[in-house]
Image (tube, rainbow, N blue to C red; front, side, top):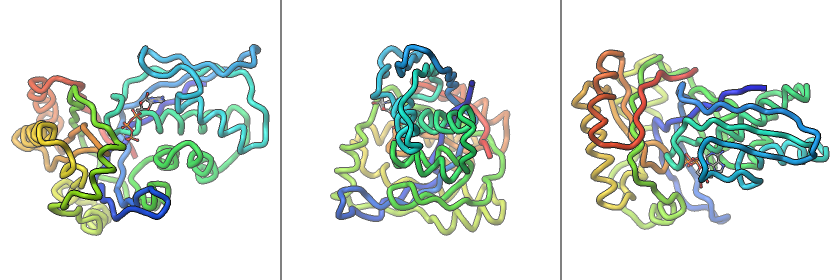
Length: 284
Ligand code: ATP
């Protein structure tokens, strides 16, 4: 069975505080985009769980989140693991704040629900996904959603009006644990207007959403990396983006466009920054 694993972007990201269990309480608005990994799953007779990807540095064993998802699936169903081959064609940049690994895990769970004719609802599949990681439940459901708690408490929102997204994952990577550790000590310049974005979504107001996008992790980036993310955002705005922000813990920066030609021009301009650059549409 072949399935797609879609990337997500954060239209907003707010960290509300640290919890007694060490995790952080989050409030973020997530959006699926058309950029996707392609996964192929097939049962084998060897009894082994094997993962292959086109990126040599990703784990090809049980450390891969796709394999984790298969193991958690059998565990939740009270079944013994079976021989399974998972081939992943990665297109979503890795360590980019776009939930690439979580999305692969979600795609495996959706595929296994169908292959094994288990008939679970998306919500029940999402609950199994929570055992793999906090972003997995959202990746199972997709679309436009408010994610709270660790990210696993989901509320569906009216879809973002269809638009073009131009995004750039710069060549450097950001350590997610280091950024979470730092966010407790930095003074946040401002917070996203989450309610304002929800009201704009309810009104179908793309420009209203785009101009309110904000991610508190931008304030926690080391200076040089923050400067680079700002340069990308400024270039996107100069090219006609309705708004620009960073996704997740970065470093991917993106802009929303209501005009395809402007979006394509912006994609070309961004080549000066290097890294991985895409122009795609949002996914509902
Ligand atoms: P998030 O937005 O959820 O913070 P991310 O985009 O920052 O995610 P990912 O690309 O999802 O990061 O994951 C990066 C880490 O997870 C890497 O250390 C990588 O080795 C590991 N990993 C395990 N399985 C996968 C997978 N299927 N795809 C990508 N990374 C994976």
